[in-house]
Each structure stands twice: as C-alpha cells, then as structure tokens.
Length: 291
Image (spheres, rainbow, N blue to C red):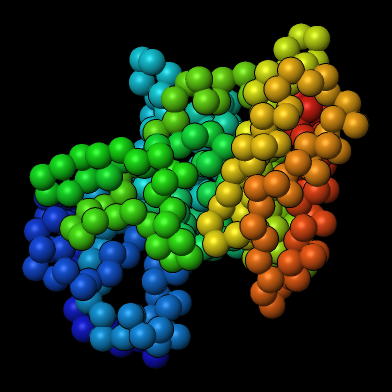
C-alpha cells in the first residue's frame, strides 16, 4: 500500500527548485523503480511522503558530445536509452554492457541512471562503469552549479554528496577517459538475470601496439559500502606486458584495496576469492573482444 500525501510535477529545473524549497522533505521521483518499491514497503522515510516528478525536465535528458569530445549523459537517461544510444555504443561499450544487465526489460525502460546512482546501492550495475570512466557529477541548486567526481559523490550505503535543494542533472565523461580504452563488466550473481550482484567488476584497459598496459582502471561493486577503485592493482599494471601471469597478479593486488563485506548473498571469504579472480577474467574478455 502506498502512503503518498502529495504529488507535484516539475516542468523544468526552476520549478523543481521552487518545489524543493516548499517541500524540503519531498522525494524526487523519475522512473519510480526504487522510490515506489520503498513507499509500498513502508520504509520509514517513505511513509506519508510527498513526491516531486521530474520526468519532464528537458535539461536532465539526452546524451550529447561537445566539440572537445566530452560526453554528457542526462540523469534522466533510462538504461534502455543508454543501451542503444549510438554515442555510448561507439565510445563507452563497457557502460552499455553494464546497464544491459540491470533488472528486466521493464526496469531498464523506466529506471534512470541518475536514480541508480543517487540510490547509492553498493551493487548498482551502472556505478562501477562510471567509476572506471572517471565520470563527473554535475549538481545544480537554485543558485549554484558544481561538479563532483563520482568517486567522491558516494558517501556510504544510500548516501550521496547532495546538499539540501540540490539535484544531480548530468554525468560528464572527458574524451581522455574513454578514448582507446577496452572494457568489460562482469556481474557475478546467483542467477543470470533479474538478480543483484554478489560481486561485480568493471575493467577498463588501454594497451600499446606491443601489448603493454598503458592504463588500467578497475572498480568493484558489492565489495564494500560503496563501489571501490583498485589503486594498488592499477599502479602495478602500468608498463606490464599482457600475460596470464600479469592478469593473475593484478587480481591478487586487488586484495590490498578491497574492504569486502559479508551479507546474506555471500561471505567475506567468498567475495575475497572473487576479487582475485574476476579482474583477470574481465580483462581477458575485454582484450579478446577488441581483437
């Protein structure tokens, strides 16, 4: 049963900020694939709640590229839109692959990437890909616009770096962060579809013509309270020749930075094992697909 006291629809950002000032405890709703679930489950902070719909706000929609090659992804972009967008297909196939694994077709058509990130779930499928692409979050309020790296945007489970009256409008990825990279995303779960990851791994790598690693970015989801990058493994890989031994050692080095958790889906020991195995598997698949 839903216990919603009021519903408002914001046609643009100016109207949204006005409504947020009038209803500071209201919840923003776009696709509703998370908000309505929590409202129906009577989660305390979603009981007797007012909702502000934002699905009509043009400034939060669209996927574009500017003259400098920076790709902007509107926070209202659905997973289905990202999965089939030509710019994403051509330049960020790792992100396309990750969002294609979110829920089922209905969820992907309704759910938005902005909602997925602002929900701040440790196992969110879009997050590890955005972490490896060094995405920047553009945040707007009635009077300010500021940019926060996605690695700093996450504060903890269900917590993001949004000030009162502030909203995530878009993600920005610079050309240097996607050009010439090869990537692969592994979602390790009990089922092949409609499941939450026990552990996920996004791998993004750039190699030179002699098959040496020029740059490596790794991010795990569901390993810690937030998605987490692997600086020790990334630093180790620089200049190394791609080989089975190198890929295996990259996985081992990931244990330096992971802070794996135990929950009802997997034990800490099992996740630690996956941490050492999944990077090599993801990198091998990324390099194979690029051949």
